[in-house]
Length: 99
Image (tube, rainbow, N blue to C red; front, top):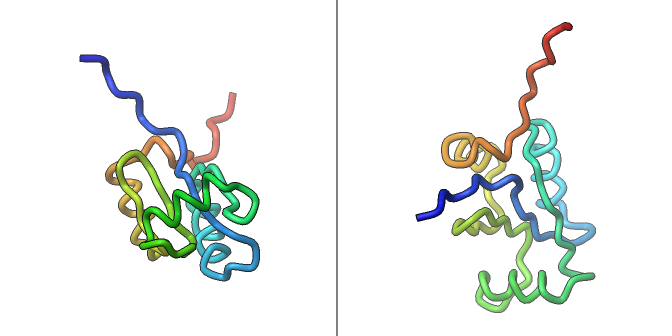
């Protein structure tokens, strides 16, 4: 059985003007979470993904990593879950050692 590669980013489905998206972006940036952004107003496939996971609604932010899809997660709780289950998506915020 081939070894499964650790995910390198969290997919974030969002739309402009969404305050919940902005709150999540700020928290992810502070925590060093690597993201791939999908604007549901510009990407039909992204819109369809969100609708498929939210009973036909365009509820954002919707975040996905591997088999986990969560709509409008609490940023701190989601980051904690990422640290436990998917540490590969969180960049080290430690300063680089001197040469």
